[in-house]
Length: 341
Image (tube, rainbow, N blue to C red):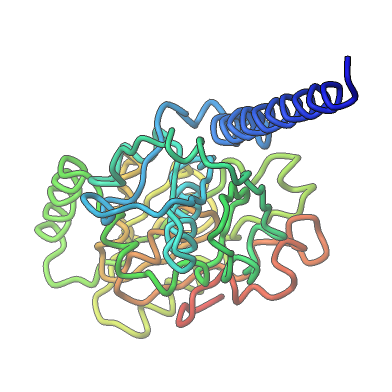
């Protein structure tokens, strides 16, 4: 065998090896991106997977019928209604600001929303050579400006709760349009509100939301979560009674006995028995004004309400694990104009 023949064979082997490595890299990319997209919630928050149904990926309805960008940003959407709304809103606006296609898993909580998005075939994204970069928020309740500018030459899978209005303020009108509840929930809320207006004509109706259940556990207390005390509700109610004439308070809570024992048995309070979360949020958002305690559910009811919002200011213990998530700057969490008590 001549030296030239050996060199040719060596070149052939090198070329074959190079092609094999390239194929392996492409296959790895596809597998890695598929894993990130399908297991995003599972490997980040195992305890929440019962609330998330990872069956399909959606993109906001405003993209329907238009061309989608070649690179995406995805989120696993974890938790219940309030948490999911924060993550969806943040993801939608982050994608829009960075010219990325937003891809979401399809949690059961979004079944309450009239038109959360349009099904897309995401296999086209998984075939891209660029890898998916996983980005985690630094803190759950403070704004992380890293998400303002993301190069759109590759994909992102982001993880976090994104509980700051600053993530989606540039897209507020679109977010509120997306978060309109399904007709059946709106109609049920209309009936309840209509009955209240008939029973209490010419009254100023102030919604009151009390969240206690998962904020009173030993773990929640240890992490620094605090519930609103009776004094908070008394101060908030006094504020509205001093500001408006003929006020009635519509209390939505699963802790009615706690209210009656600790706050007031006054006849200016009406209790609404909790129904579907979407119905309760729709009612709270449509009453004249609102008082909220703690939790993301009440936060969103307040955000959707066009009246005066009073919110509990001390939802966390300073210096606690939970309190540190606010970076001692809770203005990222509390919306401007809300009255903090």
